[in-house]
Image 1 (cartoon, rainbow, N blue to C red):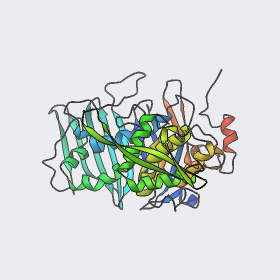
Image 2: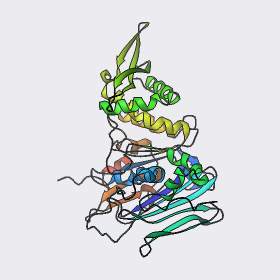
Image 3: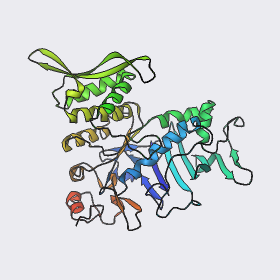
Image 4: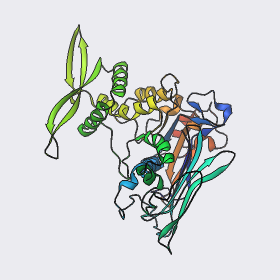
Amino acid sequence: MILRYSAENFYSLNEKVVVDFTISPTTRERAGMLKGDGEDFVNSVLGVFGANASGKTNLIRPLGFLSWFILDSARAKPGSEITYEPFAFPPDKDRPTKLELEFEFKGGHYRYELDLLGNTVAREALFRKKTRFSYLFERTWNPESGEHDFKAQDLGPVASIPQRANASWISSALLAEHGLAVELRPFFEGFQGNLVHYGHQVQSYGAELPNVFEAAMYLRETPEIMSSVSKLLSEFDLGLSRVELRETNAMGADGKEQIYAFPFGIHEIAGQSFAAVFIKESRGTQSLFVLLRYLMPVLEQGGIAFLDEFESGLHPHMVRRIVELFFNPATNPKKAQLIATFHTDFLLRDTFHKYQIYFAEKNEQLETEAYRLDSIKGVRNVDNIYDKYHAGTYGAIPCLP
């Protein structure tokens, strides 16, 4: 599970911003608290709130970028761009972008650090904590030699793994089936989000046909998750008895015949079953189908879901019901986590506690500032957070003329 992550000089995050999932052990009886492998207690859900263009999306972009960079960056061609954007007001080509991720996995406590300077990995390191953090590997770009200075310990043979300037060492180690990289791969494969891998464009998971189709193709390959999606949709009072995937042959973009899957909603009325192709269902039902494509793998297998504009097309009560799946050990047995941006401030009324709420706003320098609500002195869980937010007590609301 993720304990915390941070970003600096990354999109609108100029100064270092930390997103912290950890909480005080005294609050562990609250809904949505997870016990880590060590001494930490961790939130299962963090909600990010703020005005449009405040940088809410940028607060979760590091997860999309890091999951791609660690798993797949070595598959890119040597010399290709590392696609991200440093802070641009004003740009500083000599200042690195810094990302950190601290996490627990299979009894290990790790911290990953990455510095990027243009299309070069200026520094990359992975630490493991026993009594204190010690490095497993660390590499630093040496401009004089045009190579990385590399050191490692407790990793076994590493000499044959390429030191790519534009790729993660872990990603290169995965291609070589190195033991540590293979061990960590399931953790990063457990990241599910609607930010594309290079981190600066967002895939909507609304009711658009390509999204529904992509979700159906993904669920076709994971029938056990498809069964859970169908069950939840039928339970959420949408008039559905179940959802089925039906296959058909069609010509692909490469001119070859391929098998495609299309979802159908099954309605049972007066003892009869009626099938309707899913694009005839309501937009909200289609949006929920696509949303569950991201959430159910995480709930059933563990991991983290990072989602921008979580509630697209959904009623606020439906949003709350879905969020609460992460609070309940019966529906979240693998200690899955969720971080998402919301406009449904209804959740501030009776769903989220103060340590599960992040606010984002931009200052006059167009920098995103982000803070967890419990970092504001004097805030209590018994406060009417919803009313105080709308009164401007906590900031992060639109300034409208």
